[in-house]
Image (cartoon, rainbow over all chains, first blue to last red; front, side, top):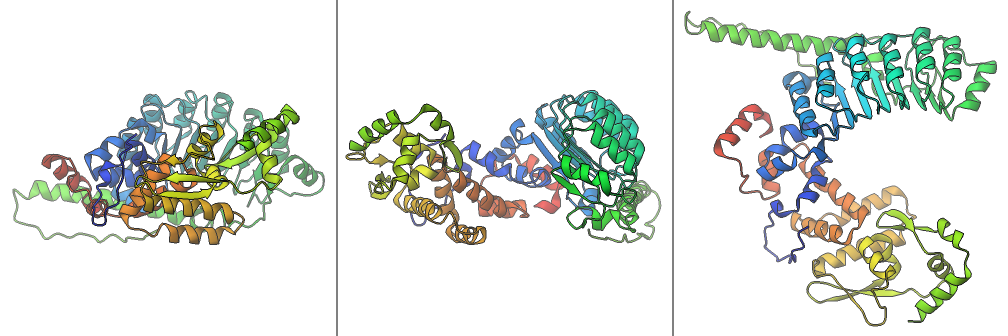
Length: 313
Length: 198
């Protein structure tokens, strides 16, 4: 570490490039992946080099970037860069919107077998059972898994994950779908669970009992909006005794991040927005390409560009 | 000198298992503390002061407990006995007087006001870090050298907020980075790829 004597002379202009690398890394690490990959790494060569350090890429968080940015920027390409830079040291990754089976395969093929925490949020139709099953084979250290609004993921994937990831302690399955089938699979295959969230799931009391039987270490359980669960009598007592933290089906939902966006009656809007924006972007790109090809031959056609509705999140 | 003898005497009287229960905050983390120190503190021993010497050879006197609680380096120096209360001062050649005074202010405030509510502490911290970027740089280097964890985290957070949401050219201005070090071709390519961030 650089122990130069520092004299704060009155008019001295410090060059922050003189800051030791380990301190600069501590600062940059606190910024989001998106900020690092779009701004911070381009500030100067020294910061670029620090942003190449695998230590900085143990955690990759590509959530909360917004629909606009998610559509405008090649987030999947950025994410792949970040995964490359982790050099297999990736421990924690969160992906929103742009998750696909190919991306999951990329994570595994890049040697990231130490992954402990995986969040797949609002990937809608990009991620399927097949992708998750193949991924689960190579993630023996997985401890936390969050599958929220990845509509193609069903009990098949859950079973594979449960079998291949014996250390799984925290599981969230918020697909506005699923019922007793998923509950039984969880009960049979995820016996080490401490925390379980099944927001707006359609399981009933028998599914819940199975979970309580099959997951003896369960400490917290979130059953908000599970309208078929009737917590009363013996079942209620059992929950109160076994669990430290229980969210009833009718507990308030305001601290659930995706409540206002997706789980109300108008949740299709979010999918609609994102897919619509993506489609519009693609059409725009195709039109540009057509114009470019035609520009040499015909006289300038009048550009009839449809204006996209930019709905900000 | 007499403190060392008292310490040894007390330590001889106390059962060894007691040390497993004695922990104290140091530099923002909790570390094992010899029970005899805790006992002395409980007995209300007079507030021991230590001397810190800045790079400009100015001496600052500060309560030992205050510095020991926050700075891992100073805590280690005192614990391993390399600091003699009667004669020594701790030389801190890397820290100038202005910065050292600020560091001492921070540690003193947080020791004496650690029971205050979170909002008040945060407001005080915000006011404390309301310095120019030179001052912030010096504080960062000092906090790093003295290993004061909570001050370091506070400064990292502040600098992070200075970068967050800013365009690249602006970040370069704020941090006085005149020569970014990229070749003209690289710089051009980067600007083409993410024009909105420059």
